[in-house]
Image 1 (cartoon, rainbow, N blue to C red):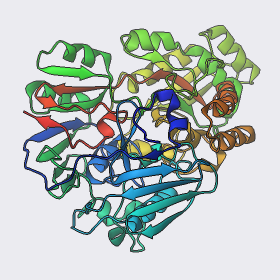
Image 2 (cartoon, rainbow, N blue to C red):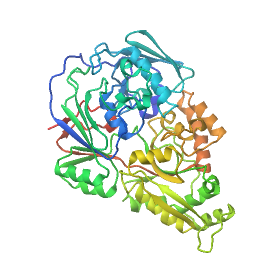
Image 3 (tube, rainbow, N blue to C red):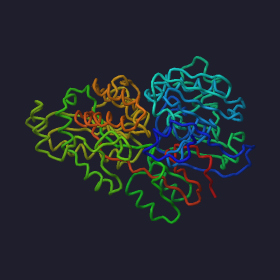
Image 4 (cartoon, rainbow, N blue to C red):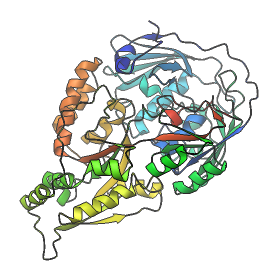
Length: 529
């Protein structure tokens, strides 16, 4: 069976197929030209997406490293390093047939040994443990065939072959016994097989990537160079975009910025390209804090927060409220959730019931709330300030605490040094990849975007483990339905809104990335006039 057109809701079932899509004959690339300048507030610690998740790493990593597959804007898998692929009918193996002309930036060929090494390295090191969790081995019967063997059916394994999730590393560089998370080649002298090669990485300042002339797709990349200019706040980048110093600004979500830029005749805005990401803006609780370990306190906080006010007033109507852990566009989302209408009297009564009576000054206890710095204040700091004001009304004193930069915030949250924090977390296209990691008790680790809430529920662990091994999406949804009801009742996280990401570009930019992974896709077809 050939995979040609796969609807969003049929993705899981349709991946039980042999893919025979091929691209035109390959040849040495013809020079195209141009430099694309991207603005970003997300500062990466390093550039190796095999051991790090998130926008900061994914945007450069997907240019530097190639993956087995890529996806179009209809959720259809497309050939990339793998020309063909076949998921076994029982879902227990995925066979990848690699191109014979792909080489790393140092000229050495990409082989099945590199694929095997990379997938097992991702399994061992990536924060999304469930993504490659069922993988037990990767067989390499020849230099261009890799067979991924699994211990149970894995309905998300084809999606897991995406650029931001499965960069293929050169085994001859990384298999040297050094810690992969802190490997020196993650930041300097980096070797991948993507459309661009690393020319310069100055943390907190810029990333410069130059065209790789031996890239395996004919006529690509079309650009000579990509420069990612890093800044601690977004306004300077927006001004740069308006002046023409910057060509593309992805992940824009502030309503005031979007309204302003929509009126600029030199700019183009699109919300396409974020379907696979599935971003939710939420307030996470540290369940090891005395006050927050009591579900009545968490429910009191939920009753004090007006999501409709946040989305309609604070966010100018660009955002929509979120009430559960799975984005509404997912086939696995349900509406039968526990919700918390705004009710300050009920909130106060719950706090009284939990034994937290107000003192003479009206205050019951104090908490801190953190937020991701350098991003959109409207989505992060603005919501944190609103929560502070609302909780004061029910006797909870809140200090809004800033971090110096993204790495400082991530380190603080990963180490458990927080009471509450605003966060933006992605569904990553399938619950196995982006949702399970937040709730599994086995994923309580000192790594950002794992179960940093310290949430433990044996029934949830069992539901997610079972759902992760079911190929049929209808049967999977039944397990996810129960899971969503439990976590919205126990409330380790208060879901606030869906993040209204947009990509804004100068109109001189062509082939703006609008696949399901958008700016976290290879930019090999992008042009600049």
